[in-house]
Amino acid sequence: MDDINTLIEGLVALGEDRDELELWESIYPSLEAEEKSALIENLQEELRELSEQKG
Amino acid sequence: MENLDDNLVHESNESGKNNLIERYQEGRLKIANMVSEKIKKHPDVARFLSAAVNATAGSYIKLSAEAIAGKSADGQDLTPLGRLTDALIVGSGLGGYALLASGKAELAGLSYGSSWGLYLLMYSADIVAPVINKVADKVESNNISQTLRAISKVCELPKKAFFKQNG
Image (cartoon, rainbow over all chains, first blue to last red; front, top):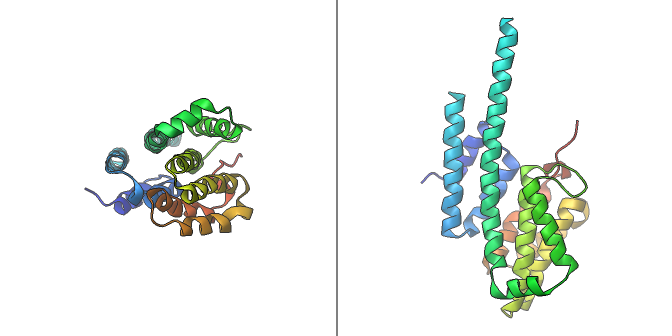
């Protein structure tokens, strides 16, 4: 599983909103396991799609 | 003509990228709502919500609606962080009722207070930042408090982080 910090840095570099993602990063340790995996999946998918779009 | 074509391609790529980002931000807002929903389903909280005709409960409904619509009641557009903060205000406020129902009065007060702290922070940041930091530091032994301590980071952000600037 990708590290959340790495995912966030990658997304910010591709144009995502840093403030919103840093708040998620702060909250992450206190999320339940299913919420953590839903968040990571969301970030991984977005990073993949944005990277593909950038080509 | 070639430059015009290049510009059109660039604009179309930008708009595609923004749509994609917005779609994933919506997905994350659903995760934030999952957290709030779980708290709302606590039997004592559900009883409170269905029984009380209460201005505070009404404000949570308003804030949830704002988070979903991405726009405040007075028509200001919310940033992704603003929408997320609205959702968390609802979560920590209702968490206060859940803790109160479980007999944890002190933690309940802190959670509820933090919800109001966040609300004030978003709408009048300068007066409340030191208070929310103190509250967040005080409660260390609980999941909600851990979340609150983490979100005290928003204290450092200016108002423009919550509301889109027009023009």
